[in-house]
Amino acid sequence: MGKKKYSIKEDFSMLAILVIPVGVAVNFVGGQLASLLKLPMYLDTIGTIFAAMLCGPWVGAVTGGLTNIVTGIANPVNFAFIPVNVIAGLVTGFLARKQMFGVWWKWILSMLIMAAVSIISSAPIVVLVYGGVTGGGTSIITAAAMAAGANIWAAFFGTEGIFTVLDRVISFVICWLVIKVIPERTLVKFGCGSNYIKEKK
Amino acid sequence: MEKSYTEKIQIHKDNKLAALYPSTKLLVVCLYIVCTFIIGTVHVTSVGLSLLLIPWFIAVPVLCIASGAFRKCIKALKAVAVVAAIIIVVQTFLVPGGELLMRFGFITIYEKGLKTAVSLSFMIMNIAGIFVWLFQTTENREIARAMEASGMNYKAAYVFTSTLQMIEILSKNSKTIMNAQKARGVETEGNIFVRAKAFFPSLVPLILGAVISSEERVLTLEARGFSIQGEKTHLFNLEKSGCERKTAAAAIVITVLVLAGRIALWII
Image (cartoon, rainbow over all chains, first blue to last red; front, top):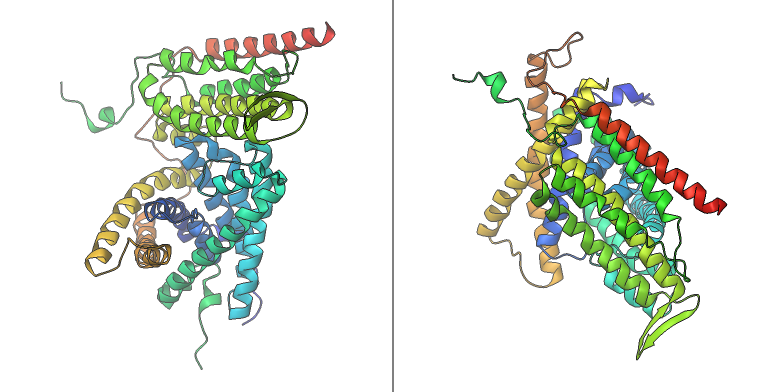
């Protein structure tokens, strides 16, 4: 297959426009489900990753941004985290374009990149805007580490790091399982969909 | 007389403040945030706390009451208050630095911690509070319509409204799928690994179904001329309450006064 050219305008096809609401809703439901099952992770970027994997970085970024705007309507604390979700979408989208989701060792690499990017982008917001704690599940551990005299940044990276990697692994596996069962005739309609189809010999 | 369908879907509010045009409300929100930042730089007492943010916060409940949406706002404000309270507690008691102010047994309060605690939490309360007012007094389709009227692409407005509908649909579907999987023997209680495993069979069918159905929705929308170029007619129209100019002027005057007061304090 020759190299595909991408343009932002073509990225937002009719199908992509309809995937954005689905992605946002999946983010929302994923987060709800994670708290229902009492998992110590947020798991609220599954939709962003999914949209980015199928339709490229710009659709992923819009999905991420819109998620936090919509959840921000109920709880404006989420507005501050818009950049985190946007960056997650962008990075995943570019990885998808570079076909980084083809082989297993590339998966591990891209999962680590995704986790690293989201920790690095969320750390300054959590520390500077909210002073290290946001009331989420892992906040208690962060607070305990801070009380023990750890630096606020170190405390955040230490606790969030482990859970973010786990979060990304689970999110990615779910997206992968879904993409594997989407029929090929549907998959080709998405911007990056053809990357996931194995050529038949 | 029987109302026609287009009359039924219009939104009419008796309260003048709640009925403001969405973009005017947005202006008020922006100016309020600017004021919050200005007031946050004023440090009073010997330790330098930005205590003035607390009386400034009274503006939010006052606005909510004046708009007649106090009950709705309280619920959203509670969620914000919880976050602010956690920040106060953690920052005051856990962050060392600066002078030691107080000590009761094992609890210590330091100057730096108290300072960040007060300014951060009330900054968040103020900014989040004004957004609560905006979204609790404005319906989502009003926002979407105003977005379109301000020259935004109609596709963007569609994505916004469709997102809100989609969240409702998918939350409902996820409950159905969860129950179905439970009936088939997927365990949702137990240790963390059992619960984590239950996450997959509930979410994968949900996403898959949503994607497949969005393919069908493309066909439906195209068949109804969604991507056609040309003038669109609207069933739902926004009405102005008539106080837009007065409100905007008042907001600007207050901002200028706050700014002037801050500069005056500097000079003194």
